Length: 340
Length: 220
Image 1 (cartoon, rainbow over the protein chains, first blue to last red):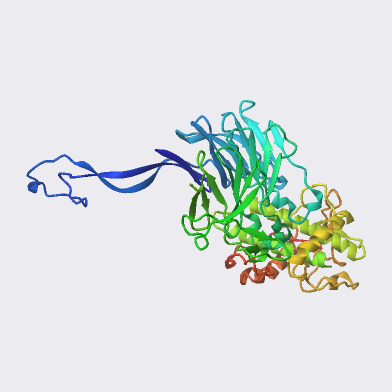
Image 2: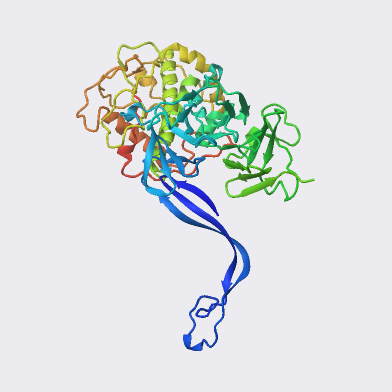
């Protein structure tokens, strides 16, 4: 049995996901299609037996945690104690117990007394994978705060503040909005965390607050297109990111159904495409390249021919195997390492 | 003047987006509204500093009223200048932003530059600005920002007839009239993006809440 938490704007649901591959047959009082039999026609009794059937995956809601959020929920994160979890909206983070649906504790509240003074919102939050008292939350200003729930009931004061000074040469109308962090994920080891902003992925060492230890450009060729991306609203897209099981590779999505992987050890990166037209099942994915400017080589794609409606916002990596899940607008792709 | 045109175009675009974000399912989105107001503010500052450089300085200066999604819709009367944030339209932002702005403007449709030394009120009535300048010059309450961040106004000001919906009722109405055309027509109405970037989904018909919802007022 697996449990999955989902959220939709302001309500959180806990679902039980189960598989069913057999069903009982041979009831005495019911036909196979469920209609009741006339009892007078029953002359013998039999014990119903389980017969195999086509595998069915069922999801059923088990808990509904409602009415604790005023603003849109952006994250939920289950604690390493498997008893509590947090949910975060634009201005507040609440702590829940999985068994208790009518109450939650507010642990972060950044709502100003005067809403006119609002300058940043919470964009993502996550519990530490090993320390059940530690969590982080990111903001629309590109900062990450690490909080310790042992310090106080209301964690308005952070234990650590992670922020990289802005590069003044990159300043534009849109600097502020592209620095907004759309996702934050701890490494499995708990030593690092990764953040995703519009153009890059950054790896932070929890022991160093003043800058990330690694930065990877996801699609730097879009920096000169920010104006158009603002017009078509793509600049507001919230991309996620994920680690592989050994924390050596990170992955995130981009446009044109491309997704990118960065190997932290070899410093190599690769761009792959999730599309049915270009990849038959069981073929090895071909690396793709975007040509930023100048002469376009064969097989390269120019920036202007990228399809910005085809975006990969959600990706996931199996915690132990090299199997990844990549979501395009209407399809879910599962890829795995080539088996020799 | 390309920078100025570009900044103005982005301001107009931001207002359009702000209005439409309120219409979307799920209600007002706080983060999106905040981001739009940040872009709006950057564009406005650039626009104003470009104006200060281009035109002779005038005597009366007035506080600009940015669209502020952080104010709740019922509190329409609030019209204070935006929160102090240590920025003001000095030539400095112009210097650092000009190259970038021109770069960003290069990727959008460039407009012909137009420098005019006519009186401001008439120079402002070129295509893009008519909606942003009230045709009847209302006298607006003086609300200077603490750092002196300000915008310029037309020469002659007249007292407004009544302070109905707040400090800038006439401006709000003019803006409403001007933008209702924008808001009612197809997605192509805001300047079109280059071919690779498709315009966003169709806009929804304006409803009777328009007068409450259009909050972006930029005073000149």
